[in-house]
Amino acid sequence: MSDSGSGLEASPAQNITAQYTKIKRQYQSILDRWTPHILQRWLATAGLLAVFVLRILLAQGWYIVCYAHAIYLLNLLLAFLQPKFDPSLQEDLLADEIEGGGEAEASPLPSQRDDEFRPFVRRLPEWQFWLSSTRATLVALFCTTSEVFDVPVYWPILVVYFFVLFTLTMRRQIQHMIKYKYIPFDIGRKARYGGAKFDVLDALMDFFSQQGTAMQSIPELSVPLDALVEYCASYV
Image 1 (cartoon, rainbow, N blue to C red):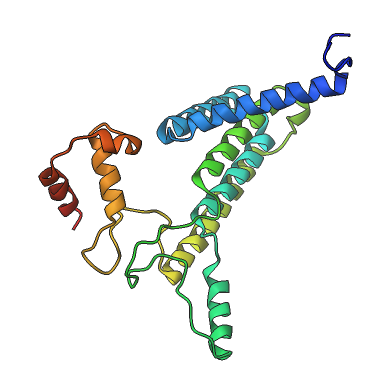
Image 2: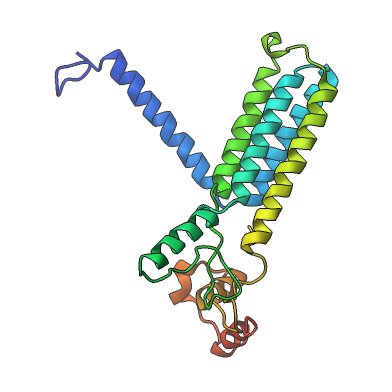
């Protein structure tokens, strides 16, 4: 017996489960370390995408794989640009609630009429967008190693159809943004809409990050009060 304490050996299934759990934990740890490096992550994904495109162009094949990959990325992009809560459904719910005698709630989308800053909540977060895009690109690259996926097809039709589909979907998305008056990006400083107020927490975080000190070590930092006040005043 290898386990003198219990007198029982671990079964092969338990060993496989333990190894799978260990690998999954290490994989999640790697992803957690990559989370704050947004630019580096997207540059790596762009490099993988460039390798995939070069593979398609040089091999003159796997056009159907390229088309499916492009359609999948387009769907991810649309989900990234769309709000988590559909404003059209919100309007219907608000109208029903007002008709029923209830009070109207504020829209979940940021607006210039709001007194406080509310970030844009995406239907697909940036992290999931990047992770799904990277995985899809790796799968597409793997598919180009097998002739099974090299289905003969007239590729100019796929190119024209994709650009037509891209134009129509993006046009509809832009019209949706104009109709409900929202922008899917937090552009500029996180100032409150409708006034010259500012988010003090964001100002402090920005200030201490420029000082090269993490928020956890603020108590040990000796910063002149005048410098802090002057920096926060720049947000007004």
